[in-house]
Image 1 (spheres, one colour):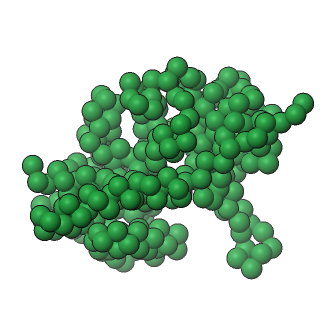
Image 2 (tube, rainbow, N blue to C red; image 1 turned 60 degrees about the vertical axis):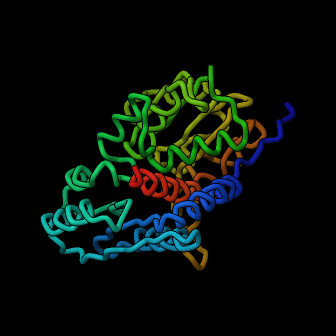
Length: 295
């Protein structure tokens, strides 16, 4: 059987197109003396978190937005962190607040996320914002799911009337992705199935899928023998796999790329697919919050 030419859904062109539009909104806000500003709270010195925070700050500076990182020691108490968030909630300086996860084990992440004002919850994780999304009137959409929607738009991947299978049910990707795809939105109106650790035979569902969103955090979970010809695949996974290189590891997705190429209609690469979109949508949410502050 002759394989099909699988299209690469690269995130960088999508992110650049969105940033170009955002730049115009930032300039318009500047005429009203408003600079979209983000407060990032980092507790401890987790290496991956430190890199993520640095990348976020760089992205904001590149678009003439403001980002300030509040670095707290790993031994910071939960009450001290809550006090900081309450101060940031009421202060006018910041339009968005982001607490970098994971937090140290002695801090209740759920309590922390609940404390962030829904009006400044640019991650879109507060139950009020998630509820608004489920109801169909989102304020802030979680960044990675929103980035996926933007990829589908940019590459004109049809969604309405198709069967979308999401592998993974996290609050960060899987659940909000379900809420987006099932709505009567521009890139929605799909029939949506969520597979997870309780699903006895994932292949039974992925074989039926027109669209697969792989967000389980398991390297190479989705392979060529689990999909049907012509499926569109969004690979959200970013997994470190040890190797003998100088760096000591390489990044792979939840999809075994080589085995789905030639079968899938399209697939996002890892790295370079969904990754560039997450920070871009964080910028978009912060700019939206800045605009909301005018009303």
